[in-house]
Image (cartoon, rainbow, N blue to C red):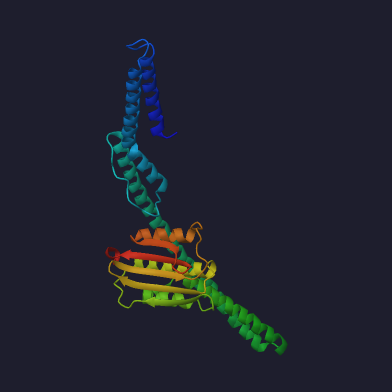
Length: 315
């Protein structure tokens, strides 16, 4: 039972008992006069109404605090409940807001460490794929070519097929290494990295088109990495899960900062719970103070919008 009804019913029992006593043994008239009963009943009703109103007003801050507690999401920082009421109620709301500030700060710190470790691990795996596995397959290709040149014609054709399979595996490993560590982002910048990323989707579906403003403001390395990873995750989701035929990627300058928008014409999210990929994008967005929204696009499909405010352009 809610706190309001517990207190109200407790007070109502006390008032009803007092009224019953006044109408019974503790009465000024015997028998009870009709006017006395009417006055006492009206007084009881007035006291109950006043009691309910006062309790409702006094406990309203607690109800707002309860709603805030049930809707708070550390990945979607929102407004804090206003400090209202008096005494312990105001102190409770202040304590809750302080706890939220501490939790968001601790989550941001832990997320930054986790994402930094994740990028370092991606860098290490990419380096090992390129330096060790890539070189090993390259040596295998050279050896296959040497053997094929000396083999009889019947065996040579089979060796050529093995060469093509090995070469395809080497290309796939290089592609994975590039996705793990976008070297073009470090060397040529965000615009070139996004163009190269959209160029990886060369199949008939989805067809990716990009629209990149040429007058983008200077962006820090961390901000560029967050924008690139958001675009990478969104394009991957559109290709693997949305069954999209067309994807539009837009990076533009806005009056308040920079905005990345990825829109597809796929099946949409349909209220599905967010997976680890979108949660990772939200954590990255929080690190640079950006705002990430994921929802249905006009005309069907899904739209991902990442807005970086101006004061984080050179973060």
